[in-house]
Length: 527
Image (cartoon, rainbow, N blue to C red; front, top):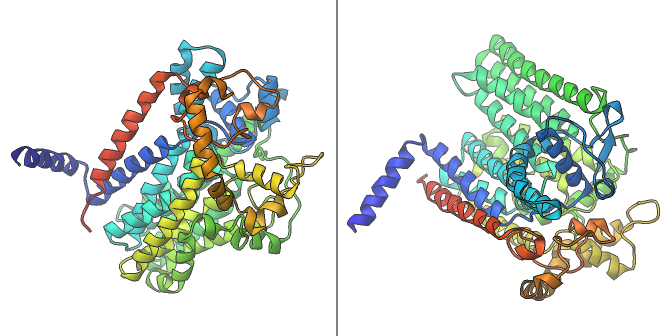
């Protein structure tokens, strides 16, 4: 008993140095989520966008914007012709920037290898990028929930549900999809904006709000409209609480920082593409039927946000109660969600194409779920949050255990359609998104027996599994595991030999698991 008491006293002394209980829980949530996301990461790319981001991150780590274009990279990467006619990555530069630290670590770890093995080692490390981005997002969500009045334990519950009971876990499992980074930066901007109108030292927080919200545009150009509601919140709340003078200064602090970030983005665009207004997405597609997009994003069996994030339904029901308690904050969060919905309901690829769930909705999903924060002190809402979280965990796990693109192969085979036609136009949309029987979670549930059997076979005979560590096959996308031949568990350390990962890399699981233990201890605070 004495030893246990001594250990407990030492632990309490260590945690006391961290600072406030909220800071301790936020750090604990970061470590806990980093452990969960890192231990369940896929370790490979899932799309051409991610391949382009990966190649761009490698170029940035070498101090340049361009990269070579060997045949395998040309076929599977999203790339564009950049400044001086050189090849560079497409899309926002934010995701590649976020991947640079782990790219440098991966390159150092891969220096002892050559060829395919070196590439696999690099990819393994870079593949943890969205794990730390997702973990930081969960911590920020906890802090926003506390700012909006949720008791500490219930704010922790809400943040955990956002982390593992929604698509956040699914995309933290993946490589470099930019939606998760956009959501994290936007959430950080909202947190700073709320603190900017409630803290005594308000100027740094208003500046931070402009920096983070502006930085979200680095990740996705579609985040640009979010600068308006966040800025209006800062100005109007400062006016309401402190008068026109404070409102003008708060607006100037926020606006100056946001404009500065947009100026940096324009400079980065010129550096890569030779044009400050080129954001790397090519021509804007023509408007699409908003009715079809809204139907798909909200009500379709294949892409409804409420299937992949049940907490969103609870948050929707809670709006009338939450808005009475924190009207300004709830209107801010709701406006961001509605703007995001309006943007993507009007584009032809509203579904996010071959992706798990409505991936574009992930940008605003955490903030929409935080509408629950003001009512979390009532008994009914935490229970509903926990139930929705449990359902969401089941759906998220299905996207992690089974390769998240397998449902598309299953739907194409079931309904007799090819994935794309001769022009590259998707043909599976109706078959997959609007047919209840083709819903990806159901398809993955039916695949579970095959997943168990195939994984057992691959573990027993890794050399015969034809894994990623083998020479390039005819279909290069299969080399990068986009279209797996067989359904098997999609986690980096399961079947490591088949994946071409060296044995020592398994030791990475030790600090990840340790982070989870420490994080769980830090989050055990009293409300």
